[in-house]
Each structure stands twice: as structure tokens, then as C-alpha cells.
Image (cartoon, rainbow, N blue to C red):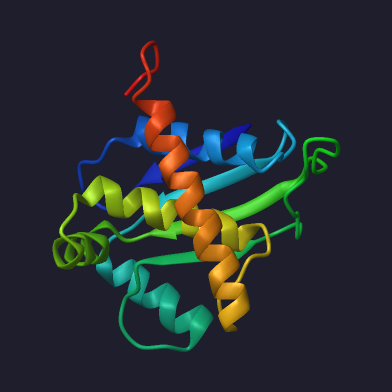
Length: 157
């Protein structure tokens, strides 16, 4: 996997953990090992600008996804083709406020948002109730599996 991470937010985060998460998620979703994805962490003004420019909505948001090659998850008998998945943009300042409201850590919120953004890159959406149920169930499954995997003996954690 080619995963680029650029932290322009000024926030101190565990970048290695986010890279492990994306690698794990892509493997679980049977995405080709040559797939490419980039993650950018930006400050509130940058996120607000992107939110207005691309979504025509005021104010900053927590995560934006910009799919490129319209790749979809594969399966155990059919790996997805290689390609450029796209870009995930996260705003740690917005994520921190959400983490406080949810009663968990900033990293827990960033793991959630990163997985959420990655699922959007792979064609998942939550506009309709059935889509929401499918996407959020998969998101929860991936996050729980990653937590177990990343805390296993012999794993970086």
C-alpha cells in the first residue's frame, strides 16, 4: 500500500497508528496492495475553505473524502484492482471537540473519521437509511478488529 500522510494541522497525533489503521482496513477490504491513498490533517481555516469549496457548506467539518479511481472493495476470492483511491482530509481541531462530546480520545475519533473517510473513498455512503446501516456496521467492525489487532502481542501499538 502506498499511504501518504501529511500533518499540516499543528496537532500532535500518532501518525504511525493512522498508517497502521489504513493498511489494516485496506487489507480487510481486499484492496490491492498497490492501491494509493493520501491523508492530510489540516487546521480549521483550511478545512473550512475545503468544506465551502467542495460541499458548498459553511464552517469546518471533521472529514472530507475525495475519491479518484472509483475503486470498490474486493473479496477473499477477488482482490480489487490497483489504483488511486483518493484523498482523506481530517481536521483534528473539529475531531477533538467531537471526541470530548463522545467521551473518548482524539485518536479514537481520528481512527473513526479515517475509517469513515476510507469507506467513502471505496464507494460507501450514508444518505439513505439502508446505506447508513451498512456503512456504519462495517465501520464499527473494522474499528473493533483494528483495536484487537493493534493491541495483540507482537504488534506495534
